[in-house]
Amino acid sequence: MSQFGAQLKSTEDTFYELCRQNPDLRLERTAKGEVIVMPPTGGETGSRNDEIVRQLSSWRKENGTGKSFESSTGFKLPNGADRSPDASWVSKARLAQLTLEQKRKFLPLTPDFAIELRSPSDDLDTIKAKMDEYISCGLRLGWLIDPEEKTVYVYRPNVAVQKLENVSEVSADPELPGFTLDLREVWEPAL
Image (cartoon, rainbow, N blue to C red; front, top):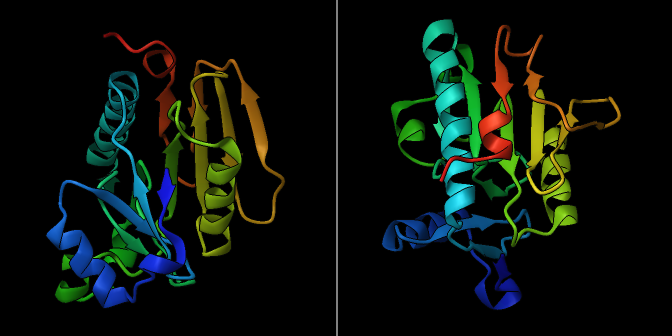
């Protein structure tokens, strides 16, 4: 992850325009306005993330209470940051409160549920800080999945982070009733 810092500070509108003009770049913006360039993922990480998004999307279709999003979806958090979790979900009730114009740009809310998948180039402490940011902005449930260590960090408001090691699945109950992520293909992607 590369951070340009002060020389590339941006406002909400300039950041949105920067993203529009550079659709091949995956960009995020901190609450201080610093732009972060996210490098493309390797094959294993891409396959892992595809599996995570596929499972979340399948549950969403069956459950019908919200919408799921993949890693290119931007969320404008209440603290001013623009973030793009690797996978996320928002209830239909919350989405119904947004205008059509708000839905066309970065969604001006924190997802109810977000997953960050650690790739080999990611710093664990940086991703943990990002998860803490989501929680402080209203996230109800978050998972930080670290395939190298076969570990899932579970984030919930006002609760200590739970560390699950060498598990084959993780449940999102009660926040996302019935959603259980099968981690077997995340731990060992078939490439």
